[in-house]
Image (cartoon, rainbow over all chains, first blue to last red; front, side, top):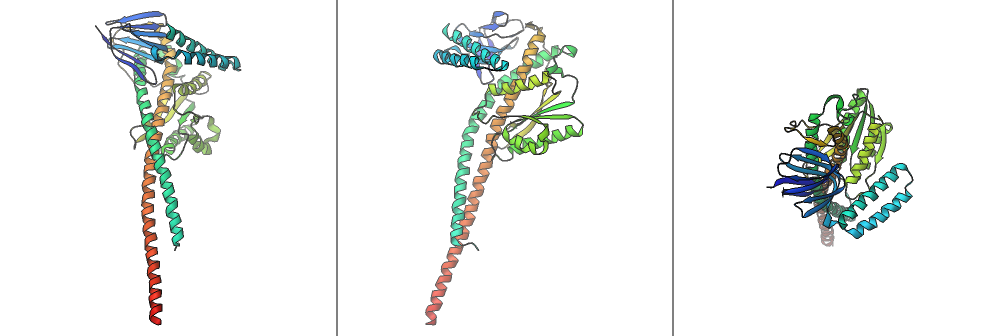
Amino acid sequence: MGFPFELVSPERVLFSGEATEVVVPASEGEITVLAGHAPFMSSLRTGVVRIDGNKRLFVRGGFADVSATGVTLLAEQAIPVEEIDAEKVAGQIKDAEEDLRDAKTEAAKTAAADKVAALKDMLAAARQ
Amino acid sequence: MPSLKDLRNRIASVKATQKITKAMQMVAAAKLRRAQAAAEAARPYATKMEAVLANLAGGISGSDAPALLAGNGKNQVQLFIVCTAERGLCGAFNSSIVRLAREKINAALADGKTVKILCVGKKGYEQLKRQYEKHIIDVVDLRSVKQVGYVNAEEIAKRVISMFEAGEYDVATLFYSRFRSVIAQIPTAQQIVPAEVPAGEPAKAAYEYEPDEGEILTTLLPRNLTVQIFRALLENAASEQGARMSAMDNATRNAGEMIKKQTQKYNRSRQAMITKELIEIISGAEAL
């Protein structure tokens, strides 16, 4: 039995349609949502969303809203895993690490560190 | 009476201007399509976010609510975030946003409120600084940004939130132009702090929250702010291109009319000159 599932990021809608099983990286552990799940809301941690066991999308930050009418994922950043270019991301990690070393102010440092962590997570998702 | 050469020069210069306005119109049309697509792609996220927020806010009320939602109980210091374009030549686009902002600013000042202005985009700053120079706290420059991204909105939102947390203002209003169609852009004022939550129906079923409700709300609210700003920037980008397109369309048409008029004038005076010369020759020949 399926349920309507939507994955949206601020820039575009990544998935909209029926799904039978969605694995969500919730902040306190992965949860698997099947049809008829109790209403539930959680923030997301960085990780991979799996739809029906075959489609994989990398998400970072956001919320999952499971209600009687369907499941909505609001992701700050989302990209299908197969669209991640591992080499390009590796290059970006290098750049970001350089930024981190060059960062002077505390704010710039935390921003750069965040970026490095995000890119590393993305790379790990691509290599899985 | 201008000479024939003057008229010729005038026609040539109007033709050159027409070419430029025509090119600008076509560029704006191409950019509009992209900007419109971006604005439409962002809508589902914003509407979903609103729905989730309405759902959550219905459950939380009173003193539990975070300040970003309930406000800090004052409205003495008002922050106006005025989003305009970086470039001109787009009809009344910038001026109509500024006009709306000016109305609100004047009303706030007359009420004895303290006004702070944050300009996004150069054009609005240029128009506002004449009157409100001392109220403007900063200008966010997006000139180097080709396509407005979520990161741009995030930067602005971070500023706005940290200022709120530092107690630098009590109420924030966002000014931008909502894109209705190519010919209709509606200047809009939207209060973003404290967040205006649409009155949704309260959650029917008992939700389970992970982590707890309050914590989700405190992370959701800043995000909602970012999304609202992001949406404003996108709507603005689409509106700007739409306004520019119709302004340039008008300019091209006006130039066409002018060329027609001037050409007619040119031909008339040329003909008059020939006739005059002929009469001179004929009357000269008759006199012989």
